[in-house]
Image (cartoon, rainbow, N blue to C red):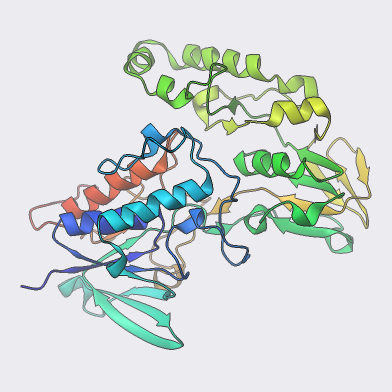
Length: 401
């Protein structure tokens, strides 16, 4: 008897574990990947069409926390893997479970739609292009494994933006610091990508300025002794502590730790008005050293452009700016699903059940993998999501929205 097929869109970490678990659950995975190699963001390319991590990027969480459950990261890797090391790990994962034969590279999915008799047969039709030809294939199950960072977002154009003579880009396009030698660069935003790019630019740029709309609580990969912080936070002791200590008190404990490592008020950045665990803190490894050296400095929120300058919200101006980089994050993009009409998004929130299922598609045979944004590594979460999806696809399963 032929196995039922499951279409998996994307061959990043989420797509690869989806393929691995499809085989375990008795399905035949068909992984559709538009690039010429798997790995998702961890497969670096200079091509600005694709959003990838830099070769210098390291995982935010330790290898013990980040591993897939059935394939621990090898002892020869450091605690925090670089982009090439992550790609090596994923390549070993694909080889170990013989997944390569299920991955169709250079296959661009252009649309996913419900079959005209979907209410009766539950079939999805996936339209894709390969080698200049267009194909349509039917699948009883579809997993969209493109993650959160698929469609860059930036604010509406600022005053006099068209008059600016320098360059404007988004962090999604950043491929390294070689093109910024001797330049004055303004970074808009204060998340992980802003800090990473600022640190990278500080080695070659004349000046790097981060515009912070408000302060952020900071986090680090390891404590001063070098012990991974995710080990401490996810320990049994800390888990029990979170159960008995009121959240405001727990916030104050971590806020005190954050300020002891780097107090940004000394650099003109206001202290956050929200609690430490009311959002995911910004990873700030390396920032302290570059602030001390003067290679990076902070300014108030971005306000407007001029021909060769920018203005901040306190009306202070910076002249002779060469490049402005918007590190303003990403927005959910479900345009592949019936031209964006299948799943509604409002204020970048899709209201998906368990961050995976659309309640209006109650069969449970369409799942979005990798949208969860935990304080911790995403890969194990994606692995659990995939397992839940396959269990929900069994005849005896019922989703209770």
